[in-house]
Length: 224
View: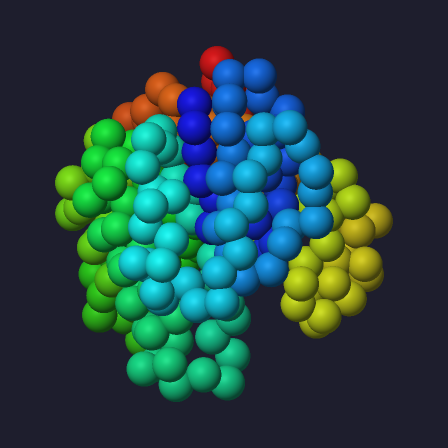
């Protein structure tokens, strides 16, 4: 497969990138972003762009792709709905339209979050915006599209969150996460599992277009 990753410097994106580099069936990994992912590999190609909204500036890179792993995200804390919608809905759909025009046969895999509101009418602002985004992506003319809704994420392989508050929380919670994972298996995923599951559904599909944590676990065990 030839894949593209958006958001490869984030916690989930780093996990997906590592799994793509490890997977022998992935021939080329294209990373598009504002900053480098900081890794070197024979099949890794990075395209750094100052403005991801300017899809035309990197549109030529969006051809011949089999899968897109879209891991861009930001906390809604302190943001207005309009500002959050611009960075979540507007940016995601702009890039997705560019991909649909140039690689319509690809599988688009989007990282959303547990609690996303598909009805688009709930009280939670971030959940509504994520729901609108999911629905728009599912309506686009891709070969397939899958929405990932992980809950708590356990970082592995030395991966760290870019958000300082999250980094501190993970440091404090690290000794408890393995125990919590055994107690609440449908609430916690690892970065490794999410990456493996994304590759699996892009390659082989999945019965449902929306994958909650239990589906992510199941898909990760069916990597091939």
